[in-house]
Image (cartoon, rainbow, N blue to C red; front, side, top):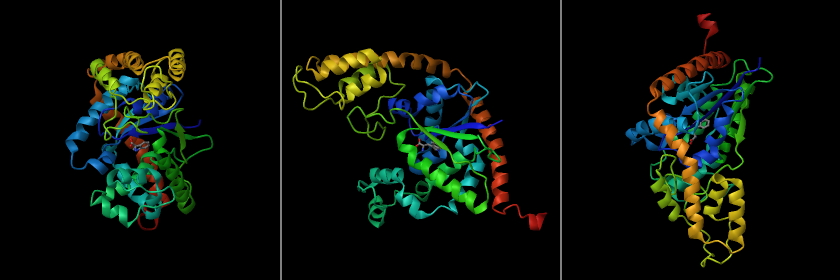
Length: 361
Ligand code: TRP
């Protein structure tokens, strides 16, 4: 029988927000019912690549994230659903180190996700065909660690540790992610194929899966909702906080009076109505806004109500999650990842001649 596995994850650097829901969680939840063995990775080691100075934050966020995941409907009580704590799987460090030997520095310098993260750190913009260079490294002033720099390689390890051994016809390694992660998955397949060419077939190229809406704009209209931009609505925000954040949202700058026609396709409020309201209402709102028959104040009120309607069941489930044995889920999922990982690492060591058959027999 074919092996069908899912591996995906988040960095625990803060609680989950609506952007995580739209970009990733929304598609993870139904995949639990589609015959996959699902591994959801809490990437705490990857969080250290940018937050090594704040391990207490990561510790807190691991718990928050686990509760958020259960709150949105991931269900670690199912036999096919595993929550994996990255730092608890030494096989991941091991594979990451070995893969680093066949990864070139130039590939990292070109990686679009790394480039945009370096831009966030340094403020220096890079065009699509430019590589990270001396200027950016200088501007980073020591803030780019070696660990950060090689995290694309460790992300390849996160994924390929779950390659079925040996990979067979029909096996699948599905990685459902938000759009910003796609370059990492492309790189995963570059390295997986390179390894297989050099040492024999151990790895299975992964299948990326991006939801219909890969990313959600922030409340300020920035292309991406994120904690560092302070433009996020969190799954754990209470009703009052959501109302206040929605009231402060940016709308269409050209719509000054209530009866000016708006541009709902680019207005964050309208985009959220589409993502979280019911379809009929979103359509009506779109038409009224474009026709100058709707003011932003009313529109925001309706949005806050729609968001709170969406979040209410998540809040209720989160309360339940707080009484569930999350330590047990993390322990069991991590143990299970180690078992899978041990099998992969045996194949990797053998392929790279690290089992020293000629010496040890
Ligand atoms: N890079 C992802 C994030 O920033 C987290 C992550 C780590 C991940 N390893 C992964 C995602 C493997 C998908 C597959 O949240």
